[in-house]
Amino acid sequence: MIILKNERDLEAMRPACTVAGSVLNDVAAWIKPGMTTKEIDAYAATRIKHYGGKSAFLGYRKYPCQICISVNDQVVHGLAGARRVEFGDIISLDVGVVYNGFIGDTARTVPVGGCSVLAQRLMDVTEKSLQEGIAQAVPGKRVVDISRAIQTYVESNGFSVVREFVGHGVGRSMHEEPQVPNFVDGKSSPKLRPGMTLAIEPMVNAGSAGVKILNDGWTVVTQDGSLSAHFEHTVLITESEPEILTWPERTPSKLKVQ
Ligand code: MF3
Ligand code: CO
Ligand code: CO
Image 1 (cartoon, rainbow, N blue to C red):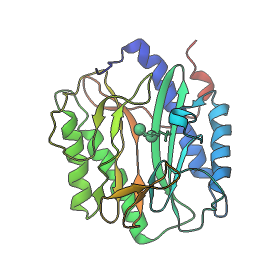
Image 2 (spheres, rainbow, N blue to C red; image 1 turned 90 degrees about the vertical axis):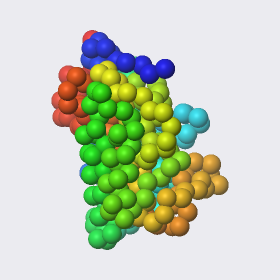
Image 3 (cartoon, rainbow, N blue to C red; image 1 turned 90 degrees about the horizontal axis):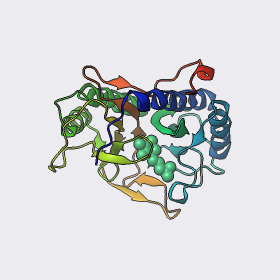
Image 4 (cartoon, protein in one colour; image 1 turned 135 degrees about the vertical axis):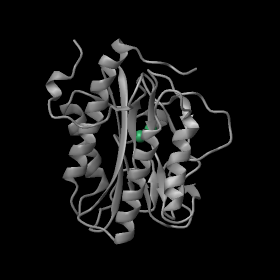
């Protein structure tokens, strides 16, 4: 069942998404060569707390970290630890926060200091594919129109989309219906309606699409060792243009619904 959000829900959910975007922004700006991923995760915890939120990931299916930090060939769900990020690495940061009883879910891949031309192109193509997907998020279209736009853009640029992990509805729960694949899967696809809130999140590999899960039970890496990037926004379907909910904002004290 797809849960449509009414204006009252959105009054609470918009700030949750703004907090997620702000935390992501803060963490991305803070990363420097030599930091451990554990330190980055701990900093994320302080930013989530600063805005009055809670991590939506910590404890979710026993996930042990505040945010997901995935380095280079790690696709998603990387675990924070003793690894130091180095100049030239690309880091996928995925932030989910609970605030006002709702969840905001957003991700971005950033370079540490600088990166290779290939890595930059991978990030650019992935981010642009997210925008192409969001442009389809209008009433009357179907979820598959989002999927097709993302897949077409990514593949026409010579990269591949991950199949095993997909976008999703989001609201009071992190993973609601419908699934939002980043490829055309040939299954029946729901019509988009005002009030739907979707986490659209292309995961794009520089090489082939295959992924595997490491022995830690969480970290997803590319099978061929190629780089991977991940961009995600929580998006509201309106009567007209899609509304991207997970932009950062700098007036957090006004966000909490009384
Ligand atoms: N944020 C991820 C998503 O975009 C889910 C992370 S689940 C976790 O759907 F347990 F790994 F945190
Ligand atoms: Co996410
Ligand atoms: Co998500």
